[in-house]
Length: 238
Image 1: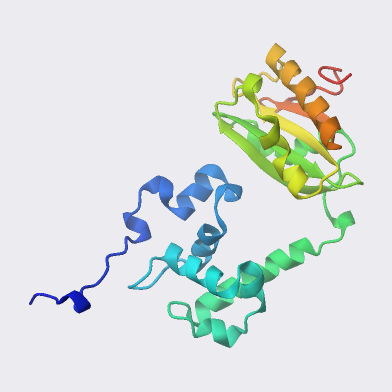
Image 2 (image 1 turned 90 degrees about the horizontal axis):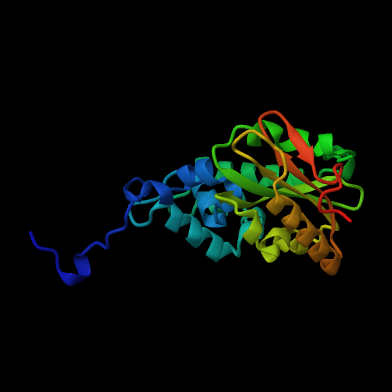
């Protein structure tokens, strides 16, 4: 039987029908959670959508209706349960995830990692970055007492140090009002010996940091279970 215009059902692609690179879980695995939009992260928690909306569309609608994560934090559990496609199980998952985030944000500074030496900073990233097959550049954001605020992933893939954009390196530090940072990138070859481009880029970032009133404490190069501190070698730091 043919459907009339009013009876036709609009087609919505499910997550499984999306290209692999567009699926939230795969994107998180490949690029890290920082690369995902809030709706994608929420979609991972919700897991499934409805017959009308795929899980990303459902997540987007919830965020729009309640005014973002803060609104989802405030909304009554019962009200959230009554949302089409949510129910008590998904509402519990959302509330639990938001509460974990709140507790993490509420941690006292002394409970966060504190950087006292290049080795302290290297320990934070060494396990993750030592054997990467591609170049990555990350920025460790610190507070006034060198407690770690956040580790921002800036570049992934082919990191040409001669064309690193200053604005991208410092964007997260400016947004989070971080007074100091440590730049980190890896050499997939395993040899952390600084190249001339590494030195030149470090000089540029140090100077740019001064203009932004953000202190670049160090630039670490990660190799296979080894690292080099540009600051200790006095490379790029006047």
